[in-house]
Amino acid sequence: MFKNQKGFTLIELIVVIVIIGILAAVAVPKFQDLSDSAKAASCKQNQASIESASSIYYANTAIAGNATYPALTDLASTTYFQSGSVPTCPAQPSVAYTLTNGICACTYTDTDHPHSR
Ligand SMILES: [Zn+2]
Image 1 (cartoon, rainbow, N blue to C red):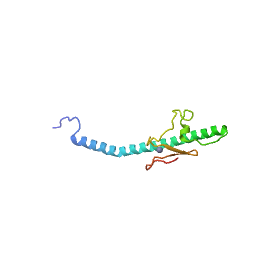
Image 2 (image 1 turned 60 degrees about the vertical axis):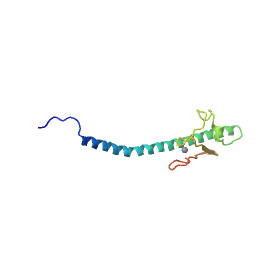
Image 3 (image 1 turned 45 degrees about the vertical axis):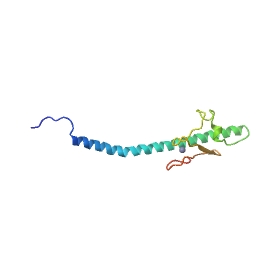
């Protein structure tokens, strides 16, 4: 009467696939959200690096007797950044930062993207 059945029934497979689908539908937006917050955090870090480089530039010019804040182009050298170029916003690399009196800001306008630190 009872034969030894191995494997899963079609209903069991469908239930498992539906559960996996529900989990994926919940997880994908979360990963997108994490990616955005990682880019925002990286952008804040870039701004902090630029402001630190600006402070070093200011100190160097103060030692030389003419204290001035740099423009962004003044920082594009290996003295201030190992790559020799000023970092760009990770959320939108074509967007440039602004640097005013040592305060850096991101000009990329998007919801939940920080304009400044
Ligand atoms: Zn940014």
